[in-house]
Image (cartoon, rainbow, N blue to C red; front, top):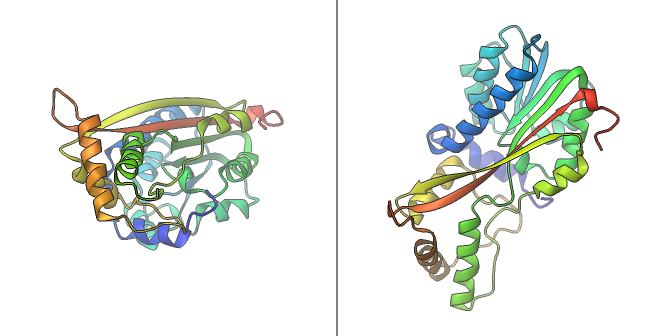
Length: 271
């Protein structure tokens, strides 16, 4: 993930601030599942200080405010447009414009809850960042992360592979490589890690690609190269042939979701 261009990430998500929530129903499910599990962890007492990494439009931030109304909440986002929307939607939250990954690695302040949804896949060094976050927890703290796993959009990846094979062109990777979940298990063996696949269905491949574009979640790496028109056409054909649902006539897209919960009770045994 070292080639992620954070300026591109900020620009592309910021430009979709008004379409993001509508374009991301899966991220909505992720945020809801994450906050429900966090609520159970703190059933005996509300966290006093909370840090959210990658607040986006404030969708998760609002859920945090609802279940922990007395907590002091700090929310960080790399996009100025996203940060401004969260400020508008969550006036009692301290919203900071910064790269969440860089921000937390410079922190020494401790938190009862550090939480993040649909952001960690954009970290350049997820192990170091989550490790530092974990060590910032108070004695009763929790690190709660929802992120995408490496099988996300496996249909799209396979269709690109087939398109390049069919056209005879030199293969180019048009997708961001996602950190393998088995490495999270290896580096955080005491964490509770839950995985699930969510299938979404779209009328056609171009509608699916538009949903990615409307979310701002396009390839934001330094090595991105233009997509040849013939490869795109062949990819759409391969996708439709291989991944159309026989009953609905719609194409399927897999979202591989990973939830990671690591309590400070495991400190000293997490890595």
